[in-house]
Image (cartoon, rainbow, N blue to C red; front, top):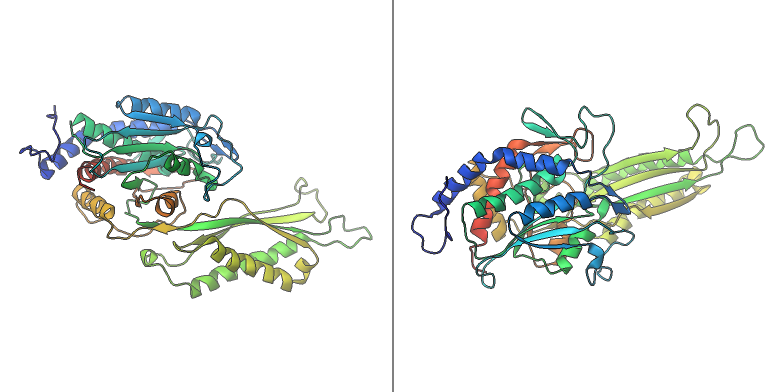
Amino acid sequence: MLRPYPNIYDRTPFMTPTNLQAAVEQWVNEHADEVVQLTEALMRYESLQHVPTGWEKDAQVFVAETLRGLNLELDIFEPSEVEGLTEHQAYWPGRDYSNRPNVVAIWRGENLQSSKSLMFSSHIDVVAAVEGGRFPAFSPVRQGEKLYGRGSNDMKGGLAASIMAVRCLQELGIVLQGDVYVESVVDEEMGGSNGTLASRLRGHNATACIVPEPTGMVVAPAHRGGGMWDIIITGQPGMPFGAEALINPVYGIGHLIVAIEKWEQARNERTQTHPLYAHAPGLPVLVCRVEAGDFVPGTGNSVPTSALIEVWAEVYPGTTQDDITNDFIGYIKQVAADVPIIQKCEMDIFPVIRFLPGSEIPTDSPIIQTVNRHFEQVKQQAPEVRGAPFACDVYMFNLYTDTPCVLLGPRGANAHAIDEWVMMDDLVALTKIFALTAADWCNQPK
C-alpha cells in the first residue's frame, strides 16, 4: 500500500517532486485497467447530440455518481437554467436543454483565495454512429493497443483520465491549496458550445483549464475554428419531354464545387501560415454534402427542383466571422453572378451552425509550461507544442473568460466516423500528466 501523503508544500520533508512523481506513476500503473474500464463504461451510453436536442442525461447521471463517489462537491444543472445565458453575445439559439444536465464537480482546496485552481473540461455528447464499421458503436472493443467505439477518442477517454487523476491524488492523500474542477458538459458537437458557456456563466471558472480533446498527445495552445453553410440553388423542375423550359440546378452546384476548390487553393496561397500550424500549412475547405432529387434511383428522369451543397471552411485564431463571411460568401456570390446557369436560378445561403472562432494562448503561458514539464516527466521526452487541427469549445474560455485554456488529449482516429478508436496507453499517460499538473498547479500561489 502507498503511504498517504499530506500537502506536498507544507514542509513535509519526505514529499519531494520526485517522490510525488514516483507515487503517481505507481498508483496509475496499478489502476491502468480501471482507466480503460471507466472509458468503456462511459462509451456504453448513447449520449448522442441530436440537434436541437440530445440524449446525454443517462451518461451524465453516471458521471455524477462516479464523481460523487470521490466526495466532490457537485453542481448539476441544465444550461437553460443559467441566468444570462440567452442574453450572452456568444449564445446560439434553437437548442432544447430539457433533461440535458451539465455536471460540474469541485474538489475544494485548503487555501483557495490565494492559490491557483485548475479546470478539466470535457463534453459528454457524441455524434450519431455511422453504419458499416467492423465494430459496434456503443459496445467497446479492445484490439491490441486500441479501444474501439463511439466516443473513445472524442472525448470520453479524456474525461475518464481527468476523473482518475483526481482519484489518484485523493487516494495518495495529497492536499491541494487550490480547487480542482472536473466538468462534463452537453451540447458541444455540431457547434453547440452553450453547455460550456453555461458553466462559465454559472461561476465555475478556474485560474487555468485543460481540455482533453484528442490532440494526438500534442500540447496545443491554439485550435482552429470555422464556419459551415448550406448553399441551395433552385431551378425549374420537370420532365424533359414537355414544352416547358427546364433549368437544372445541379449544373449550378457543379460550377460552385469547382469554384470552391479554386477558392481553397487561392486562399491558402495568399494566407500566411499561423506559426503553430507550420507543420501542416493550409486551411481545409470541405464540401461535406451534396444533395439533389427525391426520386428512387433509376426512376427519376426529371430535373430536380433544387440542389444543395454543405461547406465547412476552417480559419486560424484571430479570424472573425465577418472576415470569413466577406471572403467566402462574397466569393460565392460573385461566382453566381458570373455563371449563366446560376443566373437563371435562385440561390440561398444559410449558416448551418454558429461560427466557431479559433483561439490561442501564449506558448509561454504558465499553464503551458506546467503541462510541458509534467508531460516530459511522464513520457521522458519533450512534448510537441502546436495548434490543434479542429474547432472546439475552447474559445469559450479564451475569448469570454480570464481562464487560459490548453488542449491535451490522446492519439486516436475516426472521430465522427466508423470504427473510432483511441490508444489505451495514452489514457494511462494522460492520467499521470493530469494528476501531476493538478498537484503542481494547485499548490502555486496566484
